[in-house]
Amino acid sequence: MTGLPFVTVNGRSALRLDLADLKFYVFGSVIWLKEFYLLLFAVLFFLLLITAVTTVFGRVWCGWLCPQTVLLDLSESIARRLSLIGKEGARHLVLLLFSSLVSITLLWYFVPPFETLGALFRAPVITSFFLVQWAIVYAELAFLGRRFCTTVCPYAMMQNALFDKDTLVIEYDKSRENECMHCDDCVSACPVGIDIKEGLSSSCIACAECIDACAAVTAKRSMRPFPGYRGRLARPRTFWLGGITLVAGAVLFLMVFARPEVTFLISRDSDRMPEGINRYSWSLYNNGGERQVLELTVRDGFEAIGETSLVLEPYSFRKGRVLVRSTGGKGEVVFRIEGDRVHVEKKRDFFRNVALFMC
Image 1: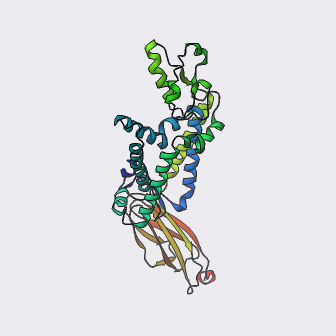
Image 2: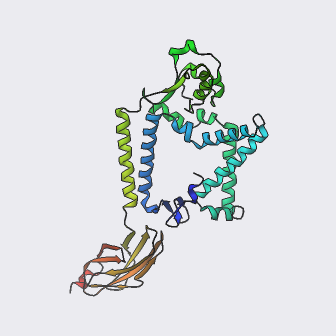
Image 3: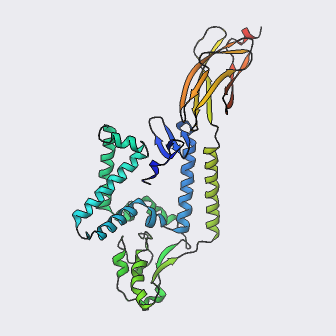
């Protein structure tokens, strides 16, 4: 995730929310604030994805993908390699470094990386966000740590409603309890401090540390470890949950990437104008990564007055106004936006002084 902000598609960040211009860059496309329904549908898709993955694979996110778990495991691994285990000062130093990396990575999803680095200690807003996030992330990792997974994390609470009897979990084999050496290495290795021998616990994050610890002992006796995975992946619930999620993902993809290259909006102003003239406000959105040279025209019977040759830079937005005068037309104006690869039409009423134009 730290490297993703450096990835660019069509010269823009692959994934970034631009608060200044109220647009969201998504792998070569852009979602504007006016298209917030797309973000809502994206949230729906990710909720379906989380539900499907948790129901089938259990807490695979907690044990293997969650930034909390990854950072804590990585800091412990570094401390172990540097023989710093038990040295609190060294551990806190490592966590401070990781927390600063997390904080600046979060900023990169809103401000381009090189722009952030250039303004880090010169722009008060960026500096403030960086320092506050750094402090929060460090405090959470250093002092709350694994307890966050068992007490605060909402995803951990949600699993109780999503699990079923076939969900993949780590379970102690009670049928072989008489063979167990009761060395309690599985308990010592558990990052959340549970005893897998006492049965399945909602605090388990499925990291499989207990399996590795037990395997190191049982391998010497040519035995398989006592804790192991239990569950059934191939079952009806897997297929219908997976199918719904895939359909939602495909619909989201089509909604984002099948949009027109240029979105054209126009509305009639209510301001009082001279006889035979109406004023319209227009907005143009360039949804692609190429520069667009466009011409605004109206159908026969009307004349557009004002700026009609328009240039749209990649992923840009323009708005303006145009006057329309009747030269014999009545009732309805057809606006056209045309370019090398763009042709958009919009119809709007022209009902001011209609009686005048019917003569």
